[in-house]
Length: 417
Length: 147
Image (cartoon, rainbow over all chains, first blue to last red; front, side, top):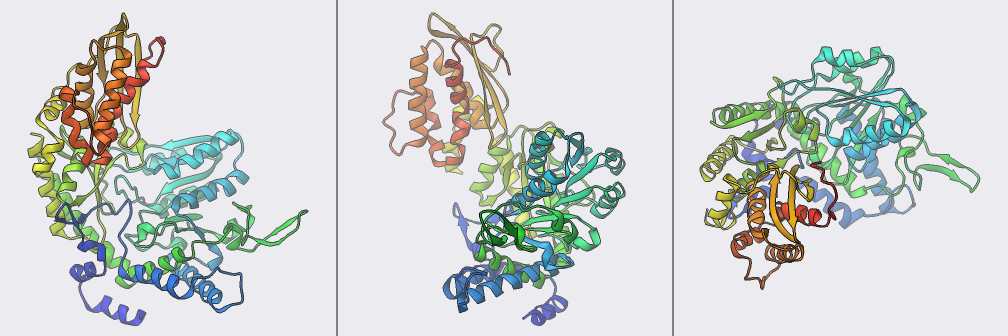
């Protein structure tokens, strides 16, 4: 299977029409119009391979894992183990002990805050977050700082939506314990120069917790090369099911951390006097995992790996250029977030029209976009706006869909003129 | 775009572009701030109650066309009403937006919002100002904070 996909990858150009056939939902009509799905930063659509994997699991080998000696349990357990190996290779982690299954990126980030954070942050310490963060990489740290009497420090973004590296470096000091950073901004699309930033943090001895939710669907990620201490992502933004996510953590760090939740699976032995915790990665996986979600995530990783994320990144970069060019030509439309290196996200505002009204009118044209603050209110505050309209693209989007968006924006402007 | 016109009726577009009573009152007796976490919109409603009736009402804030027009039309609709009458109007208005067959006929201009029923995600936009009004009316003559 993988050798066949490899062949396709090297032999053919990026055939978006053929790729679209793999996604049943893309044939849907919305208000009688073909669906133009441009809300991929919120969640992505699922290829048939993922849907089939879920159906196959529930139809043929649904059983609990690590529990029983019967055949179905063995198959389910092996299925989950194989996906852990896949994720390990996908991120270029050193060992499957470093791959923890969670409910999603938010759960992963909370896990780090509640275990590593609680263990290592004391009164007077600092946690540094960037002005680009999604609420899920702000609030857990804010809660932790409140609990510990630590200080939540912020490095603000500039007018283009970039974190100035000199300011970032200046914000670090010997009290910094944790730096919480998005790899890619969900609201603006900015791609942070992560390797360089992580090196700066490591020089001062702090750890970096990366929110990679918006990065893994768009580019190859190598946690080893980045030297990230923790890296979180969600399955549903990577064309997999909802309810499953991953936390990567360096084994040496994970070993020293206390468990997050207590329960089955995370224990080796339990008496009323004492519980001995399980080894990595199970120490952090209390309770029955989202087995179907794990199986579906494995199918999603196979699917995107088959396409090749380098080619995906190239294709999406062309799509983004096309969209940026078209939208920036429109009178009365301003793009928010103009970093030179962006993932395929365009946030914009239209003079005199609230994003909610933009969203409703585009919806009637079959175009799904996100409108609002994108769970990144500090980003909106930075630009002194309440909300934006955000079009976020995936590899199954086309230039003609971008053109539909542009035509939709014209309709919005006519309607409210 | 006929169905869009059901939502964005002329009166709504007019009030969204030229909102009435978008002013800060000098000496309000009641005030409240409303917030719609879905879109981040904020609205402040201020009232001046005299002899148990709404003598003056103003709102501030920037929102979508639906929420701005709703706030504007609300201020027109409740002038001269008692607190009970205003709350009862809100109840009827709410049924208009959410119920299958609203048996509501005496809403006057507010009836232009009936199209919102087809857009469940927008009901909160249309009711934000009204929820804020109710909070203000129930604020028991508290000293006013513009917060």
